[in-house]
Length: 365
Image 1 (spheres, helix red, strand yellow):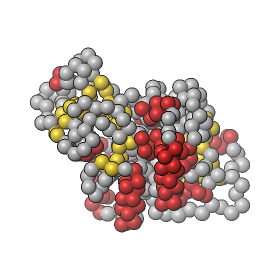
Image 2 (cartoon, rainbow, N blue to C red):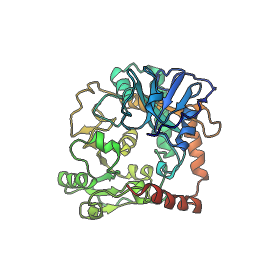
Image 3 (tube, rainbow, N blue to C red):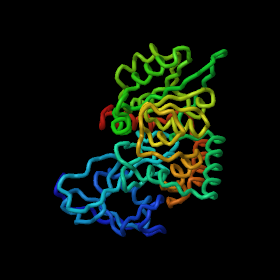
Image 4 (cartoon, rainbow, N blue to C red):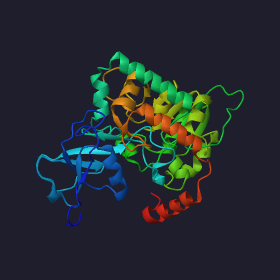
């Protein structure tokens, strides 16, 4: 890191000072490292009432301070004693469009224990689920939210406008969603099988008579991230490949879903589909999925409404696209539905040009 002077503090004055949506207590001042200029502006909206100091060198972080990092980024070397690490990452109802396309998020998670996709250690989400204590009004709210998500057909990114028809006469259709193999969710959540083609081969071996549908990850299809190892041979192990089809369109037409750690497994659970986990996503190990790996820390049996309450209500923070202020998942759901209705299925020219720039700047990784 450079030794440049620290950026000026950004003071946020709206309600909610010092506390994020999941109850993680934040001090009046926090430090943040490794956030792009675009994410800095977003972070300010998600931390109302907190003074955020973006720093370029760890010497500017005093002992006992709180340091915010993006995702699974390693803590900088040379931190003073007692610096508390808090991690920030995309939430589960995010946007209409891909994060890799720089579409602004409607939800982030702010986690003081770990991060939800890192199965090597507890996260705030895991601890919420393990502790329980979900009261009846919260569970009713979770059930209503889940039903609205199903009825509206919303998913995390809400991409894909094509259709797909289940072949007549098929007895069992299994959906296998692809992932970006370089993602941290694979690195920290799939200690055994960790490739798309390995997953696809395992599904074919376990269900040789099934009709297997493979859906490559939308970032890969968009050319924003690299395809997985051997992914060009996917047709050898599946009966069909789908691309421009939303997960909300596919899920009602399949009988089961097999995943490594994909969020598609969570979206399938919301819709009552059987899910088999070959890795350890945040929703595995609670008695709702068929798990190929043990998750000994997750000893409590969780209902689907408890999973929804923790994952979509208590864990994330939401910001309204209309007001720029913190809000509820129900309001964000309304806004995403309205935004999707106004959005064209054809990517605008400026967005296609931006993708080319992103490929040149970041490379396809």
